[in-house]
Image (cartoon, rainbow, N blue to C red; front, side, top):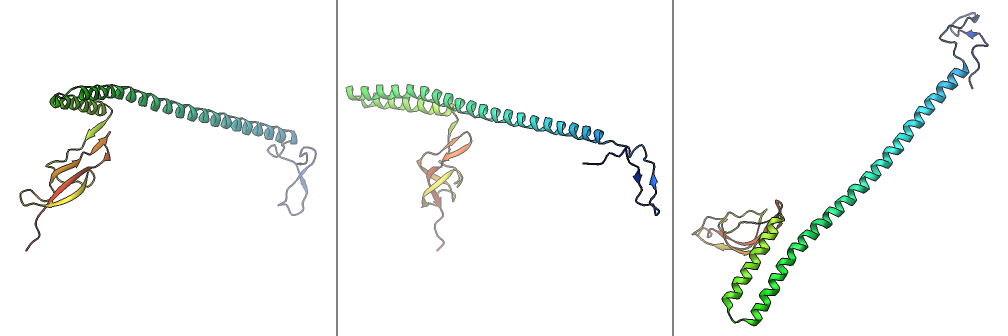
Length: 188
């Protein structure tokens, strides 16, 4: 604890004969005043700490709420996609039933083509897109080469056959096209 400065004379350490001096008004700070200021600052620090705790709790609640909303949105999105896919399943079941009961291959093929077209339309509405490959230049970001074919008819690096379709989902390649690419014959 600090001594009560009002009751004692302040000694000026720089004086040579060390005579007691009269305290100035600035130096006349009582212990009670210091204690009050300290208590006031402690209270401010406690208030700030309490505010910080509330903010941390609010942020944690916000984070949990956002995670829950994201999970619910994913579930709703998946539910919507599955509900849409049920129409394609129904169409495939009808096509199988028709194939078992009919010998008309043309009608069955048309039905299956229609189902496939509807499935592509559904997937495209969700963000799926086919990667165009045939006749284009080979792009290692979009295509995977299964075979290199020596061919002078096409420019080197041209895709002449698509073995398996490639797809992007909302702009991101999720499966590259599997292709055959041309190359020039070796120089003789």
